[in-house]
Image (cartoon, rainbow, N blue to C red; front, top):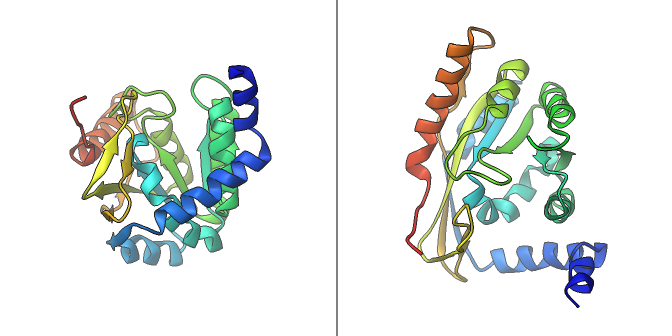
Length: 219
């Protein structure tokens, strides 16, 4: 029974169902967007933009991210079965997905993301995904930003009322009709070259910048 259920979860009809469920559920949010125009103006000036968020908070932004489809944005997603579901939903919102993570296919996917940023100018990245640890910025985002000359834009979501799952990322699901705020931080331009110490310093800088926006709840 469990194997049959897992098979159903990864079928196209179920992915379509999840996509429409997210769209309808997210309509209940009282959404507020903060500081969006600043990075969009940079994008119009042909500066590549890499939006960055914690794994905990991406759900709240899915419906609004559909409005970015006109920019042909890119997103790196793991090759896991769960990643298949997420990629299916992302593709339906108009995002181009490149499949890979630190554990499998990461090098090819990262190269694809770098090329996508150079060509189309907009991408997004989950900093501590797909398996954590929570609040730890992985090195890949630094390499992507450096080699594509992208401006890294921190992104945070906050819900007035939300459930927090007992998962590695303390996944946040806003409650229906909750006020949800999607905030974009100021862009960060990372130096394209330097020593390994410089590389780690930039990774730590991004982590320190993003950590105050991480929401930790007790189980």
